[in-house]
Image (tube, rainbow, N blue to C red; front, side):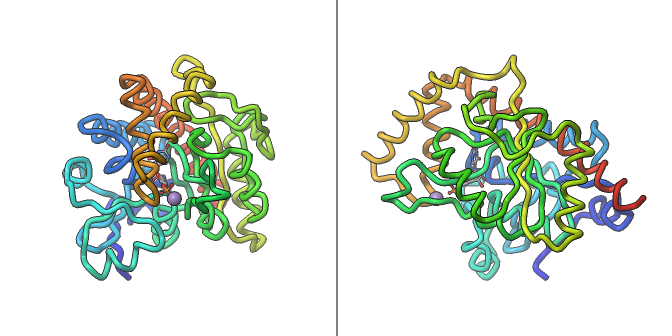
Length: 304
Ligand code: PSU
Ligand code: MN
């Protein structure tokens, strides 16, 4: 298989210790340098502090690497030739031996190959606003439908059509859980006005959902949405207005396909003068704490 698992991660997996995977698109295409590398390293540290082993995933010269080194993370943060790799891109990037940053979809695929059950990120892709015309629905959603990994995120940005994203996930049988909340968080804000399917009171309960899903042959992912902490959250209406402007600008400039999400993220960051970036960093750290705890609970549960 076209995969290389670093020694520490390999040993942890063999011993059944908790491991949390992390994506690289957020590094190469989601945040500017040097915040991207600083954040990636801080998130790994946060996973460790909370008792799990971090495994940042990326593709180097066509090989899926599970557990990037500091130096490799730095390269993902600075190189200009890193392809954004979703499911359809994966075999081509392997064949051509390119560098590739893994999206939520591909990080799930590689996590599954490696045997990692918990993956922490910021926001997932979903059904874009205007998808009834553009058909722009992220491959992340099909991956959640099919691949057995729990994904911890802070909900989805309002660059997406949140109600349609929830409908899609329901159709494909993906449980949408809220960590200590009934409401779907909207990335920068704790509130969206929409409900999650179930409120999870504890990380142990999340581990039990994983166990009961996969042990009963119910294939596919689980989405755990964890609201940003109050002190870092931004006003929903203010962000919504900025995002609407971003979408209009993207349409005007003819930005679509895989370029759309990075374009919107960068526009929002510029308009908020980096305020959104600080929130983004804090919410990923918050997800790392919860994800590490779930990985611990799950590994205890299956080794009882
Ligand atoms: N949403 C964010 N930040 C991100 C992404 C999404 O708030 O960095 C990235 C993730 O890697 C996600 C990808 O999997 O964008 C989705 O891209 P697309 O919409 O092209 O499928
Ligand atoms: Mn898309």
